[in-house]
Image (cartoon, rainbow, N blue to C red):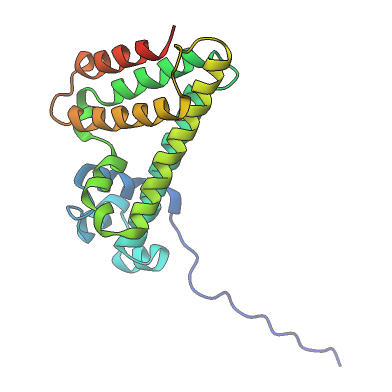
Length: 204
């Protein structure tokens, strides 16, 4: 007599939505309103999910916010890698990154601001997990800039006495400041001129 085999039915219903697309929609909601300004109904409208589906997939508002913040930071770091492509001239790459940041701090993008900078001001002082994420993000930015500046130094393009690590830290601070200023004065000339003047001090 043939042995019976039992087939276990699949547990739960398969998800009928694109999880990464939902994270992106949530990211845009948090980016526009901030963490505390984004209520659960806002997230349900943005993601087009039911409350049960959202909680089943992400565990709640905070967990979804962390996913959205991670996505935002990963996208910005990937773009930075393109702008600072080590196959190109380092000074040209640095100027491309500075120009891109000035552009993003201008106009409608400038008024929207930066999710990382906004989160740092809203949450980092009271939330150790978020503080570590944002600190790591800025340290990664510094490392990428320091690498480009070191390559510029090796090519003889940095001014005498410029330390790549210190210059990288200063550029990150200026870039973050641009995003704050861009919230209220989102004019391209206003955001571009100071970084051009600063960077001219670093290069020959």
